[in-house]
Length: 227
Image (cartoon, rainbow, N blue to C red; front, side, top):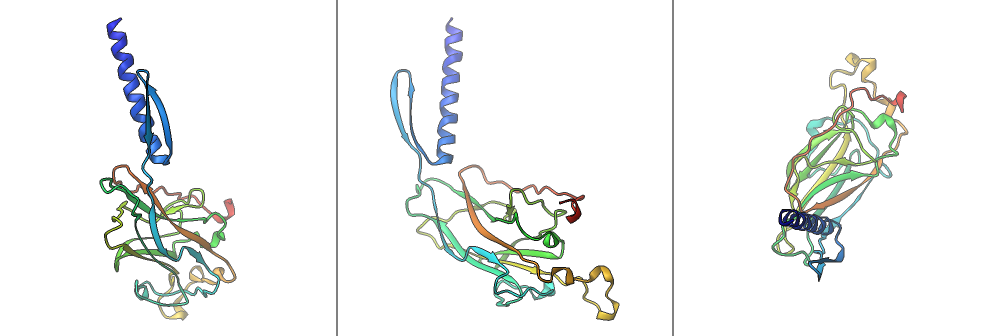
């Protein structure tokens, strides 16, 4: 009987810890009873101060193939999509709590399928230094529920009293043929992008778990015809 009681006590403690962790992630206030005593717990209110643009759209932008070597964080070119933004923690965040985050490109569910291509590339810069890069090709990473994670390694959110992290996200169509135009093949013809549209938005996703490195999932068999 004593052993059963001890096992039940252990289960109660474990269940209580799990409930606390889940509630912190959801940011809610709750109460639970342990050993007949009412305990009220208020979860931390965790947030991010985001400054800058959020929306990625072809409206007002004329995408034309451009050489990868021309892509710079400081460039200002109407022929690429560019979003500049900065992030840091809200002043209401607990000072002793380490918050990590991902930068994601979302609402990509309705993009024209021709953009799911290895020549539709992106780069993410942090404080002027390239942080990550990739393409919209499913051979690089699949897009789940219109979401593509840009940060290969999760970043630590700066405190509200610290200098914000400054980001630049650039998306462009990479030139498939860099030779003399007379040597370009039919497979390198990029007129398929003409008249097509692409849109999305940048979101910062917060976590209080251990920092992780992203494992990308690929789909080598993807084709527009199968959609």
